[in-house]
Image 1: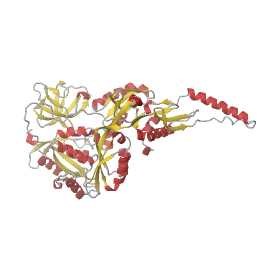
Image 2: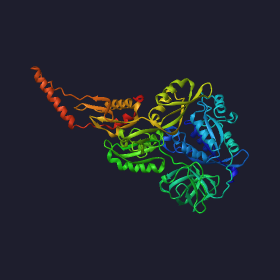
Image 3: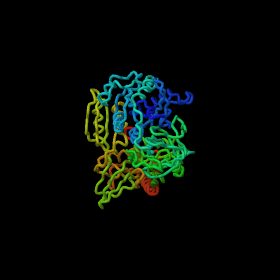
Image 4: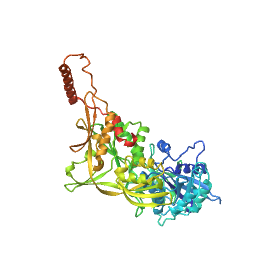
Length: 601
């Protein structure tokens, strides 16, 4: 198809603003799938995406559209994830388009990820088309949304298109606006093949299916291609476009969005953002914007039953085929046996992996407390990175420690500002900016440690603001901190799987919380169990599980006190001996309970 009749666009929005529902309406209107095969959130092909109403993995679809003037257009729609954990994938999807539909919820207005995604689109010089969704809701406030579009985003509110994705209102007007206002792909200066990888998925029969946007040249069956990040070469077996299912074509020309299959066996060989070129006549330089995705949250995974380790390893390898951003290596614990130390893009990514292991692979697993990666400078001058408490060196060998910081942007109704400022201050945040967007809403910017956001920050932010505050963050580098390792001891024996790295000022509260949780979970024995939290040799928290006592005096109806004392002393000696040989069994629920926040209990 001619370049002038191709339109490449994406939808960017804050989480839960109706992006997947709008995609459903566009697909239904184009009739590229039968009504009997249609289902809601058709581009979300994981159960967890449907249940949570979020997009985790971006999808693409080619929509044929005949405009009002009778000209047929090819609309390539690239769906994007909405959550902050997947910002890099969003940026690559945006880079493969010429225009973006900026979706705004009529009842919620402009939120933090709406702003950050718009800036991402502006960085790539995209034409932005504001779309106000959910106009059918009783709480919809269209004049306020238009004011925010002008005031917060600096866009023309008269350009905004009003739609109700749920009811299908305004979809025709949206199609016409896409054709008229989103520019066609620009002709390439160079005939040499350049294509951007914006996603990929694994097909068990054919290997990796690579999703690409072709910027110059073309991709054909039989062509030998080269990945510019690692110089690996493959021969193309199949190319085509997405019409929910894969539809083969002879070639993908410049301006097109589609896929190719080249017998690639593992997803980790493919890097999102990489440039594909021809091996015979390669391009001089790759397309800009490629970077290695680095994990920021770390946790260890262990099977509930240590005999299931091999099954868990196979499941992790299969999961890695579909998720190149998951990193893992072997790990072991005295308490939990063999497992894996994993790196995740964020907490949502961790939850998704946990649910997929349990649902897709039927694995019963335990996750240890999530941690971030700390930078330590040793007294010898060597710098090491540590994310696992088991690898933490002796405190005496550490000269200084640094932890990752984030720049957090929160947009909230002014009513809840006080409680949100208190929350951020409690989480060691430093306020860098506060700006009133209008009479009712305010944007606050904080710099705070990433470790403080891991546990309960997001849940508390939502509860304090009754769900109205929105949150977005970027990692901004490492800063000095006072770091300590908290050890948990049961009757003087350390439980390595419960160790945590923490800021010194929070160590007492964290240790006390773990001890309290363990006291509730550990069943009483015939002997006393001491649960202690320690930093080095210093005990900072303690709880005691009292013993189950047999009433040895029940048979004494009378007689001298010395007889009773003799029986009690005998019992005491027996308990002391039992404590020396008795082991405390930690139930699996104890590990899960420790991960819960105080608010959950």
